[in-house]
Image (cartoon, rainbow over all chains, first blue to last red):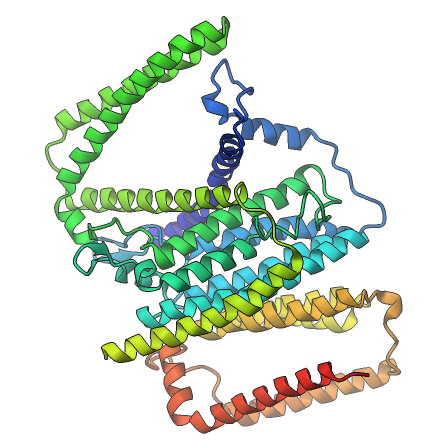
Length: 423
Length: 164
């Protein structure tokens, strides 16, 4: 009974905090990738006791900076809407994580535990509904600030998001026709198995055009470059010009969480979600001991490799810096050796896994694969942002209505014909 | 749990609806309506009508209300732009009571004394059941409504294209 009450709370907490944990990682990734693409070093100054982690400490310094900034509210704003906008942006962007299945369901003591906060049999429609709610956050911020530029920025983005929702919905229908269900859990489960004997049966291989359309629409919905006209930092003024300090940070985090959530949705719909390529849940569970051993060996090997790399890095650091920053490689090298030794010890003492342990292990592995897919798409978002120039507004609208919508309709027709032919 | 959810969503729906007609600021009115619509979606969800829940959020609370708000913004409507409707308070009260009475009668007639859904109905609220009903038993009505919507859309385009 208590278990029944606690489990949804636990999953709700996971759904809330998981996207938040991705944010510092992606912010760091964005800066480092931008630096790499522009032939710079990127952030590397912030340190905690000499530990810099290649700039990974910077997001925390950013948080401190944003909290310490003056929280300036312009005069004559509509206070309620001005404050509501950023909160909505953060809250709404987290919602898709409530329905994305994080791993295959566990069966413990005769009951089946779905690895997601809400089991909704119309998951895809819920995702679309959430994207349409995102418009409110932006529009309210633009209106509430009582500034003509922010108002125009908010309206520009509302028009853009409403237009691309249509393309997004149309591109999804192909997936629905193939899977015959709207439930995200069932869609992921169907993506196990093989296609033509060697490819994982992911929807991306069955719906390449639909995937491309969905991806483009997702870029537009999350307001990422080349569709970042709602912000338009460098030339056209966007909806959050009047925001500072933590309220701006909420919009900023909202954008990154929307990116993470979009990556999770696209991984779930087109890249098999938690599916481990070529290895189904049953296979993994049957060979849990082997899987655990392979994992431990991999951890040990990577630990030793990291230690070797940190050693040469340490030599360079000692030449470059004669202060506590040179300690970093030593600390990290020791940590990776420690992890490798732990993994080897565990490997030596591991003799068998109970069925429940096997299930949990498999769920953890599947969750890690989902995280890896999310991070891969996060990197794609970043890569595109620093590679492509921004569209002009009429180009955005033209692409949405004149290319994506007809192509989406074509995709539906072709999918229908193929399905009819197979029948 | 169900009862608590029902009362919370009902309260939100009614409060949102009341605020929609009492707020002076047009944007506040529209957003109160959004709250009301979302609460009604919540009511659908407690009745295990998941598809209606999603469609209510997607179409009404999402698309339609976004367009309403878009129009409010594009015309930049503020409180001072709202013409006061020539309706005195007693008359407004009378109108509300009358419409409430009509609603109650309609609910009585169409519910036919039923107060709850049959609990054991197979696939209640599921998308399969809905699609089967729409595309077999109510196919004619469904197509007629589609044609009506298409005609409305064409009409809107014709009106918008007319040179004044």
